[in-house]
Structure formats: structure tokens, C-alpha cells
Image: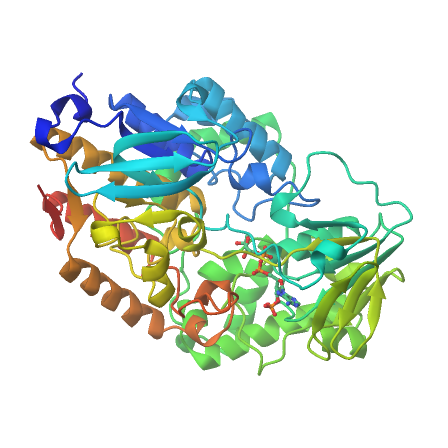
Length: 548
Ligand code: NA7
């Protein structure tokens, strides 16, 4: 089969590769697989020493996903789906990392990769119509297309506090967790952050450490995870539903199996609403958030109602202890349930009932700096700790690419462009950056609000099919037009601004990173709608994209 490289007209320069892919996570592995299957010459780089992406880096205690194992899947091979049998409804990090290793082995994907190598520079040459890509190991390669599968939550906010380098004990960001086991015995451990990650850490290590100091700033609405074991027979039943499930996740609001199915919140009586909440609560999944009522995302009254339901459940679990309830339950004035990421947890709240767990309220007094022996607050209080865990999150969506020196037309810098305003064309490209394809960047569902495997595969398929089409047409350059990108941004903003999410500070809005332009990262029109729009562009031979 002829490759795009072989088809390239001489005046465009002949790159070494048809495509360079960054990342060996869920998206990068699949992108590498698809391009190789289609006969493209592909070179992939991964900063980690092995495959796994998120599941390679986030090996902190308690790490597991909140998507059911039957949908956190690749859909291109039923045999592969049948072969790898998850042991739980929500498997933990080691099992997911093993699964991605299995996928890489099965399809012999490692041969395309250079591991332990970070892409640091990617410059587009307008004359030759190719990208020159350099790494931190000194390698430089050229490729017609540059494809980022670098992840939406892969740029950790590590250096959060002054004085961190003076700390005498060990300090870990959760996304840079060491491979060796940590000995917690006899240790006082500080955990900063109570997002989905901090919650998993706290609930897991509370019983192992001598003392745990949880630095809490914004309390969370949480849902207890129902995580039954899966037997082989359970899995075989799931395999029977493979085709239906594959179709279903492509059309739901969030790429999960469940979808809004209860009509309007307004049409229900308080008792009916309550029964629906209770039903989903028992399910112990994200269904309460992503399928109870759509108005949870848009309507103040619905939001207040479901938020109070969750608060009530949380109060019960905290034995109605006034101090704990005050510190750990969001107030109506804080934000509404589901306007930022809802974590599933396992006895997280109960961890605070233990005598060895202490809350440090960062709203009363903020963290000022890290000292050699602990953490100093603004009011001068010092909390001595032996180990400091930073569950402080990520520069989400745009961070991974912004940390690379990406230059498009006329040497324009993506970091500078996104530093002013985060814009993309459907999340698969950026005007001004020809032959750049993106996954898991802002303005697509894969930037945040989606079952990631569903949304990443859809983008990879779109990109791969587009490249095949370009090859067939003998086209060497593609770029979203400014008009198309502007229209997409406007469409995205219209939907985003109709939600309550834009009123809440969190990484969904980029507000966790100082100076980051505020915009809802995730496209919120629904996964099915997004897919339809992407398909429509492809069906119209990539309308909105200039080709030459
Ligand atoms: P998140 O959800 O961004 O959480 C970060 C946490 O760190 C959050 O509780 C922050 O409080 C806290 N934080 C950050 N800076 C500080 C300072 N200076 N002082 C006190 N507390 C601080 O990141 P996660 O890793 O938990 O989750 C990211 C996603 O990964 C998650 O949503 C899943 O999709 C998987 P704040 O809320 O800003 O007050």
C-alpha cells in the first residue's frame, strides 16, 4: 500500500514519517494502531518508560477509574474485549495498566515507540508542509502530520508552593507517583487536595498512616462507589452485549452506558424525584450525575434539589457531626452538585471519623509555604508532616500541548495563542497550525466530560479516516479555516453558557491555573451530538478545513 509519504509531491519535502504521535495512553496506542493498519509510516513518542498514559503515571494509592469496566474499553476488536476479563466493575490502576500493556503486546505496538522520551519542540515548515519534531533526548524527526494524544490530565501542577524543594521528607504529586511501595508506618502524612484524586488517596491511606492531615479547601459532593467483583462468567455475559454497548456509548450524553431517561425534572413531583435519586444513589456509579435529569446541569432549582439530596446522604455518613459536616459538605452557596467533576469514593467520608485523621481548613487560612519539616499556613500555624502528597490537579486540556514549543504558521506559538484564548476547531485541530491533529484538547467532550475511551476513540477514528482521505486525494496540507473555528467556538460557548458549570470554579473552567483564560474545556452538547457534527464535516469532505 502506498503511504502518504510516498505520494507526497516533491516540492513539499519528503518527511521521514507520515505522522508523529505523542503518547502511549488510551488514545496514543489506538492512534498508532490505526495509522499502522492503514499503511502509514508512524513514529510515536512517550515520556513514560512504558505504555499506559494516565494509568502509567497515576499509580498513587487508591487510583481507579469511575467508568464501568464494560465501557472503559476499546471497541475495535470483540476478541480483545472477550479476552481481557476485568475483575471488578471499577478496576484499580494496576489492572488498567496491565490491560493497556496487553493491548500493546497483542498488536505489537511498542515497536513504533521511543519511550522515556518527551517531545519538547514541534515546528511547522510552511514551505515543505511538514513538522520538525524534537525530543528531550536530542532526537529530531520530520513528519507530515503531528498528532497529539498527550492527554487531557497529563500536565500536573507540581510546584504549587514556595519552599517545596526545602522539604526534608518525600513530596509526591499524585501523577508522578514512584513505582516502589511507600512505607507509611509511623508516618504523619499531609494530603493537599480533595478532588477525585485526593479523595482516593485519603480513603486508601487513612488506615495505614500514623496521622493524616487532610488539607481541605473546597469540599466535594461525593457518591459511594458500588464496586462488585466480576467473575469470568459475568464478563462472558458482558461480551454478548458487545455490539449493542459499542453502539450505545457513541450516542449518549456522556459516552457512558446510561443516559437521561426520566424526562424533565419539572414534570416530576418531589416524591418522584426523590425515588429517582435514590435509585441512582444505590447504583453507586456516576449515573446520578449523568442520567438522573439534564436540568441538574442547567436549572438552579433542580441543581439545588439534587444537591440537598446528596448533602443529606453525606450528613448521615458523618453521623451528623456538626464540625465534620461544616468542613466536608459543600454549602448551597458554594456550588451545585455536578457542576464540577463528581468523584465516586469508598468510605472517604468515614475516613474522617478515624481519630488519626485531621482536617486542615485551607479556607480559614491558606497554605503559605512548605518548610523543611511541614506546611506553614498564612496564619503562621505549622503542620509538621513526614510525607507530603500533592493531589493538586492538572493544567487540564491545554496543558500538555502548551508545555511543548509548538509553532504553526509564521512561527506563531500555541502556548501564546492559548495563553490569550483557548480555541480549537472541534477539538481536532487549531487554525494557524496546519497538519496538527489533536485529541483530548479543549472544546470537545474528550477534554473533560466524557467516558474517555468512548471519546478518544471517536477522535482517533476521525483523524485516521481524514488522513486516509487526504492520501487518496493526494492532499499534503489540511487546516481548519478561521471561519470554521470561530463558528465552533461560538457554538461551544452558547451551550456552555447555558449550563451552571460555567459559574463554578474548577479545572473544568481552567480556573485552577492562575492566568489561564476562562472557558469551559469540555464540549457539553453531548457525545452523540458531537459525533454527529464530526461525521457531518467528514461526509462533506472536511467542510471547514482548507486543503492543498
Ligand atoms: P482537581 O480536581 O483539580 O483537585 C485538586 C485539588 O487540589 C482541589 O481540591 C483543590 O482545591 C486542591 N488545591 C489546589 N491548590 C491548592 C492550594 N493551594 N491549597 C489547597 N488546596 C489546593 O484534581 P484531581 O487530581 O483530584 O482530579 C483531576 C481529575 O482527574 C478528576 O476530576 C478526574 O477526572 C480524574 P480547590 O478545589 O481548588 O479549592
